[in-house]
Amino acid sequence: MRLAAPTLTRQNLLCAAALGLVALSAPFPGLQSVFHASLVLALAPRAGAPLFGALWAMAAGWILEGSLRLYPHFGGTAWADLTLALLAGWMAGRWPLEGLKGWLARLAALSLLHALLVHGAVRLATTAHPWGWGWFWALLSVPLWGWLAWRLLHAGAGPGRR
Amino acid sequence: MVVRAAKWSWSRAGLQRLALVLLWLGHGTWVLLGPDPARHWTAFLDVLSRPSQAIAARWEGWRAARRDSGRSLAELRAENARLGAELAQVHSQQAQQAPRLAEADEAVRMLGLKQQIPLELKSARVLFATRPATFGGLILDRGQDLGLEPDQGVLVPEGIVGRLWSVGATQSKVLPADAPNASVAVMLMRSRATGVLQGLGSGRALIRYVSNQEVVQPGEAVLTSGLDRVFPRGLLVGYVAEVAKGDLELRLIVNLSAPLDRVNAVLVLPPQPPLEVQPPFVAPETKPQPRKRGAP
Image (cartoon, rainbow over all chains, first blue to last red; front, side, top):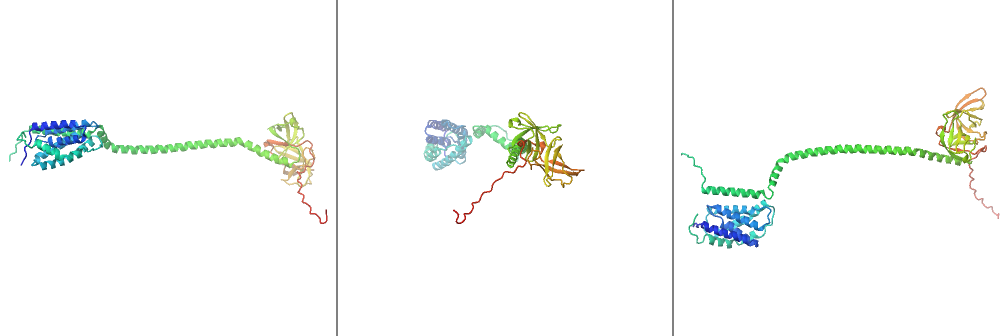
């Protein structure tokens, strides 16, 4: 059973809300990482129409780095987010979702890859840097925000614009 | 199968994909450039210029080694020049100190002569010599201030020099024994034959009034006889150089032993010295006589 994709408006609104939460949760890096990962990996990717999702993911990366105001050269996180959003969108088109478990498993794998790619890109853009524990909280809370994104995006979504 | 050329055009999805690709590549380039974009070009150019840099480094190292070797040669030359200058300075100092050493040596010999002759000898320095001139002699730095008088004998450790000819207030003139107008009473060491020494110049003299019956050999020592009351008996005058028989007397040429041309200091004998002068007599230690038995 192939799940219906959410409407573009709904998805954009959710992404905007998540982006606001990313900006507002700057004082709490662990929570910010969770919002950031959920936006990039769960809310932004869209099969077949990746442009908006890529832009939302990039915006999430820029806002995250801008809120930290520590890097000597911004852009690493945004590029990693863009890459992962495109990858997730391509995966959504290539292997359509069929249930919550597969969704959560995919999110967990993407979260791990996202953490690695973000830190690698930041290292390329700047220098060696502390990883922190945001990636861990994001990975740990995958069931929570994965389930929530599942509910917001796919549960009850009717046949919308593809 | 007929192949028809597809009409090339940009669809909406194609434009989106192109935009995404450009976005991804541009952003990735931005990330890769990092905070200092020039460093990538610098690293790239460094890699490109590495061979030429290696060649240049080897060339510079070769030139530095050559320069160092040249510098070491120059340093060696400079050190050689410095050592040469030091050696010349040492030689100069040695030459400056040579007269003092000679004077000290002569003073030691004078002191030894003074101890051998138990007379009151007075020392004087030779200011300069006029021997090459006619009736020339030696000028001493002491005169009447030292109580000198004419006809006092003058000698050096090697032998007699002559006698005082004239005495001034602070200087005196010595008539050397080889002067033509000088005469010294002498005797031959082996035969004890006496005669009169008359100067011939240039450190040579002639002994007269020696009978041709005497047997004299060249090399025989000639001593003062003391008969002229200028020199005591037994002072060395010189050595016989030539012996020739005349009608009545021997013709004896004597080489004076005193280096008259190189005399710097002399000893002056007292006037009218005794005929015979004995060296200082040291009495042997008297052994205690064993006490005879019964003696008090």
